Image 1 (cartoon, helix red, strand yellow):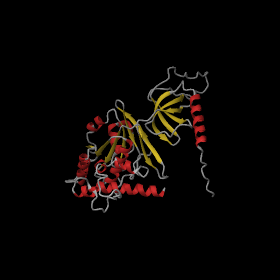
Image 2 (cartoon, helix red, strand yellow):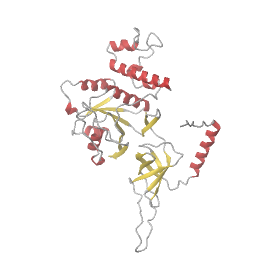
Image 3 (cartoon, one colour):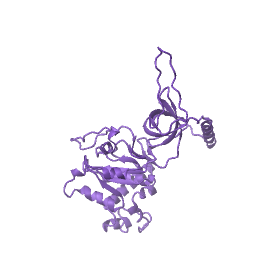
Image 4 (cartoon, rainbow, N blue to C red):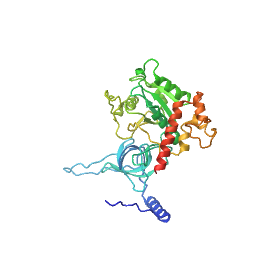
Length: 352
């Protein structure tokens, strides 16, 4: 099969297309637009929660006696509608605030515009493209547990992603009741706390009042390895969330994927939880080296103090990072994690 190359557009053609899209958007009748929140997406269709209602509600059709009752869906506050989007809109994700229009005759809607985002969490997909995960997040909760065994390198990746998106992180060690005496995970938790990260412990079926209070007025994304109890925590905080949970496989000791799409669940006053599909790896190859550095603030402060400007931080005797690790000023495992990410990104950039 012949390879079909995508035609490159000139700058003039791109400007003309953008002008046409803007003109079409301005020509749309937006008088019946409503405020909405994207709470889940299914490919080209999304579920939108109504945050406002029309000033004048459409009237249900009157049918004569003996005729079948037509389908009709009232436009009510907080009702959820399956929606399509205008072709000229950017890719929408869970958490986006939008303008949309409802059709009570079909129970469907169409999204006409998107509000500016306060934040956007992204990750690269298998096709080497940056994929948005969720929008307008104000806090990312990184969940880990004694079982499955925590992966510090994955936690570090999440923290880099948080720093890149400028979203605060909360590290929650779940299933604390499974801890053994002198469990290394306690040292791991203390290390992150000493680095300045906010940490918290929760127990299986335990009291989550402290965590619930911390999440008030926040739009939160839960991330972490599969099986650490993200969906279970959400079920406990929001009992009607009806999230599916699974028991960890005894054979592999790895979590089973239970969440199939990113979903937003509102609770309390102005708070929302976003549960995203469990992932065991979090690629960051799309970031620049400078952006990786901000995810390791204790290392970033030492950069530029090595003897050689092109120091690899791997074998040089006068390397400020290696000297700091030997002196206990920074964690050797954090330095290893940083260098692995730098190598990963450098290799990916060379291939591209």
